[in-house]
Length: 284
Image (cartoon, rainbow, N blue to C red; front, side):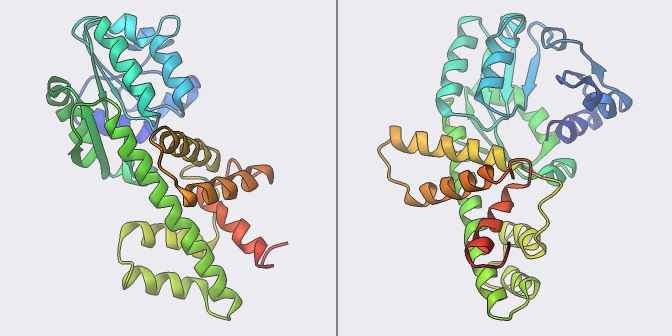
């Protein structure tokens, strides 16, 4: 996700320095005009703007607060825009750490797969200080089709993102079961997915994921199944802390855990469909 998002910023004319642990993955950005740093600290301009798009809380915490991390280098007057799917508690913690150093934090997680990022069609939800939002707006507008605000509490946008991902995966599970039912009843999977996506479920989630599930094409992954498990774990953690029972989240956790046990972590998260198919005797 980070590469097409950075490409969008570059195309807007913003001077960009990028860092990736695997330097070769930054090569397309270098070709497009970005400067490639050799370390996290070298990618940060004191008092400037840093955008992070990382896989999980541990990576974000390390990049921000670890040795030669973003927070100390950014310092007074800086802005850190976090676009990762992480725990709201992590955002609250990092917002406080940045405040100690005189810099701002903005939570700005996104909805959309890599192809949406490449087309500058991400949906961005944000929360944080008004000053941070004003400064971030021109950059966020280069990456997304709309920015939706959820107040000043740093973790709010993360709760929104986790809620959305929970709903997406719930829809994937529902479609997987329905398509398996149709297939076992002699109905073409793709015909059913096409019909539903054009009629009573005429929306991007059912259309885009319906096509993937109908074709049962789970590689290459647009969003890895192992990352889906990370998100569902976060959903359940937030639900427990808020005393909110979420039995459907428990089912999704079980589907993902079974998939991981079968070695499918690198497949797209829609590959939970394979478990439904196996339960129905449609796969070996």
